[in-house]
Amino acid sequence: MIKKIGLLGGGQLGRMLIQEAIDLDVEIHCLENDINAPCAKIAHGFTNGSITDKQTVLDFGAAFDLITVEIENVSIEALYELEGLGKKVYPQPRVLELIRDKGVQKEFYKTHQIPTADFQLITDANGLTAPMEFPFVQKMRVGGYDGKGVKIIRSQMDWEKRFTAPSVIEAMIPFEKELSVIVARNEAGEVKTFDAVECEFNSEANLVEFQFSPAAISKAIEAKAQEIATQVISKLNMVGLLAVEFFLTKTGELLVNEIAPRPHNSGHHTIECCYTSQFAQHLRSILNLPLGDTGLIIPGAMLNILGAPGHEGTAVYEGLEDVLSLSGVYVHLYGKSHTKPFRKMGHVTLLGDDLMVIKEKAEIVKNRLKCIALES
Image (tube, rainbow, N blue to C red; front, side, top):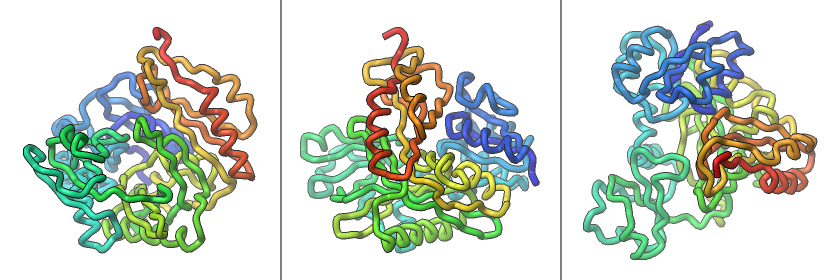
């Protein structure tokens, strides 16, 4: 088995991947341009450099037989070259290239008859009249993440503040729920899915605030979500871990919203709630090991710890002792010393037998645990 992996990126996803890799006696070596990144102090090796610079990635990747990523915004050109040199790159560069451009991603769904919202592609929004009946959603094709690069266009006034960069224009879906399924596939072609989770978004920051498992959906919808997730990763012929985000419409239809080829915020609960965590599953898939049992041991909820609005500076956690005194509560801090509004600073997983009780406890944690700036 490969014992050293080169990882592009050094954020919290890499940090949690390292924590799982230790149990397999696998070394994770990171390339990241922030010397204070979450991985910096715990990686087996840490190289300070740009993951988007072709030569930097080539030089870094030359030392490893296997390279993976924790973020899509990397030098794909360098990964193609490393792959051509016989290095294993998972997920594959062609998959990263497809997913990084939301327009190409949407065309992939259309070609492979994967259900998704109606869309149009625009290369330049300058001077264009609104291309769809209000309301609709505008997404930058490249560069958006965690709610950035997305605008809800409800009126002509909103359209006048549009992005002018190449974009995807999508019909706005009157959905009932937002769901996510984590699916993995190894080199041997084995595929396993985790149960669907239900996500609740922070409307101000436009990113996940709460996530609940299991999702409150029928067995038929659960089976369909897992079937579509399996179809997506199989059609991509991808090796690695893939998060498939869905809209569940009011008529019971599942539409794929977006996909992410890496461990994902909607899978953090798996660390405590499932027999195999998403991070262990990612390692198993890229190392071509048997995929782990994805069964749910206990219901749970996940709450993102976000930087408090109006606070920027050295991070301090208010209410941490109060939260740690609660039973069934697991706190994961990401080691980020600097906070700013809505920055992901950590997450909390809450476990229990009754999901309603867990949800009530999640509200308590949300109100008690705050990440503020020491200087504010």
